[in-house]
Image (tube, rainbow, N blue to C red):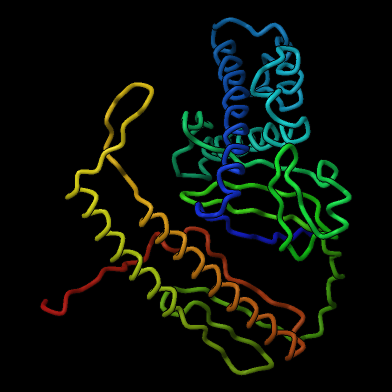
Length: 323
């Protein structure tokens, strides 16, 4: 079973800009691969056929393996800027985007999915995209010493716990910070036999989870902290957005000279990051508590309620005390 260990890299960290530059290279490669698929789509509808993938004219999109060969043949600058394995991982991620798109499109045609379905779009010119390094790409000498060295840079990380069992390292750009993810492997335990001791949890809003069992008393997990975190976030976000409007802060595109309205700020980015971390921490503690209770009561079967679309029919509306 695969697990992920996450570390946050803030803008104040000297390694931030170097890691961000690596994600820019991944973004350039993604856009180059997406351009090939857009041309392929055009050729299926009367446009010019790409000679190297002409045999795929009946396929919905060009697979990452053929895009990889085509970019190599073209000696594409975006492909050359990355290590071969990392470049292939970027192409695989775009491939997964296309697979998800056509899978949802198929469900929509069958009437099993009602949301709007959009094909993958080009990343912004100033945007970023995750970078993946496999274990084989990293310095084995440094790994033995508990150090991860990003290839072709002087960026190192020595505070990861699961280096010995790591499989991949991911640099994932977020809004105002970077998440360094270490994917590691843990041997999956065998499924426990049915011992007649059961528990189920019904997720909610005011109550995060209501647990019922045939061998223990019911248990409620409070959703108050989650609501409190979100209320504080919404209040502060409204205030910060108001300040952006009042100050009329603008951003100038250095290429075109066009002046654009500033939609975010460092304060908003910090606020969003703190909210996400608080929610992640609370959910992790809650799930850990549930597992401890199940183990202590020797419950082998746990049933979790289906939550897909469960918030769509709720009527959460704040009522003023003056009403």
